Image (cartoon, rainbow, N blue to C red; front, side, top):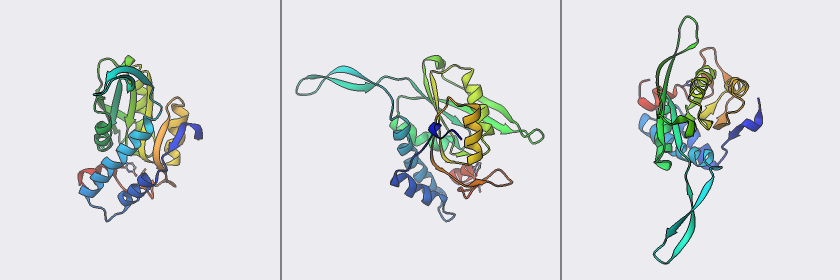
Length: 210
Ligand code: URA
């Protein structure tokens, strides 16, 4: 694992809310609210190095040069659980455009197959933040990043809630240029590809389809 490429967001608010999300007893409505709150906190961390441009503005008192973000940001959700992380991020980055990538795992080959891909038209001028709550095997995330790179964005960052060591290893080896932001790296994957201890199936817990 290339540790320099991975940021574990250890802020107490993030860790507290993640623990509540992990609990089996946490119901769908609370899980969704917590995910929205954590995603805002992760958005704060992943945008920390955005450059600022001084603009002349007028306060009610006088003119001044004041900093603004002028970067074109695209948030890319890996369907369907990615949409749960998207909401809170969009609240902090309301000017961002949104892309979606849909992948399913072929039951025979176990490789990811694309069923949906829709991006804003001007991707070569855009910085991308890819969101998917669970970085498990890393296969879907790695395939999504490869597909995204065909659009030649300026930069790509990957944000998840929980990562497995296996997923981090795969993503950092296949995409060493993509920094990963996560609230935690758990112990391992189980034989079904779930993160242990994890929080279960993120999509099911967001949408109540357990
Ligand atoms: N996807 C999930 O939603 N949870 C896991 O633990 C692994 C993959």
